[in-house]
Length: 171
Image 1 (cartoon, one colour):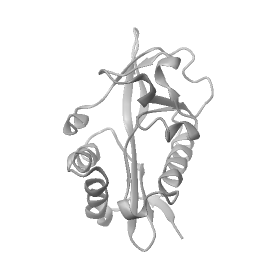
Image 2 (cartoon, rainbow, N blue to C red; image 1 turned 90 degrees about the horizontal axis):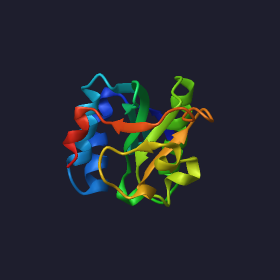
Image 3 (cartoon, rainbow, N blue to C red; image 1 turned 30 degrees about the vertical axis):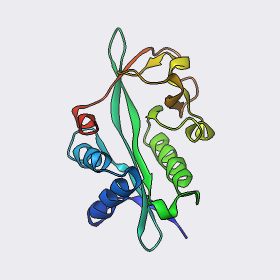
Image 4 (cartoon, helix red, strand yellow; image 1 turned 120 degrees about the vertical axis):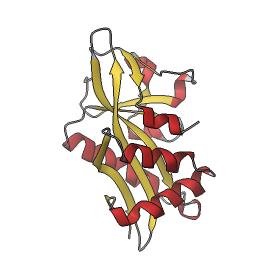
């Protein structure tokens, strides 16, 4: 049985290990630590999949959409990982579903993700460009996506996502 719950301090080493193994490097583990140390960290949105051991992790943190008039707060889903030997068991899907549910309950309206176009659309993510939201760097349109937890919440928002400095940890 998988329990999805908020991370605890004693989970930090396991979370770093999950990202290092899943992404075959240290960048994402560094990103999690940098976000955790920043003002953009939302503790309730750093979730683990626990099945007698921590087998997956997802993090949603605050980023902004720079419009012509102002900075609009939103969330970024980054990173999300499952231990390699536990992948393809619906754990990632459970993490995404619960993270989006909790984000909505906290009053957030939308989430951006730079991710696999074969995975995220099943949760309601669409190309961000179709909503007038642009990435701050060149990427394929189909991998930069947005999800509206409140339908129509991006109708009058057009701009470019601005990531906080913590994201510079991923090169």
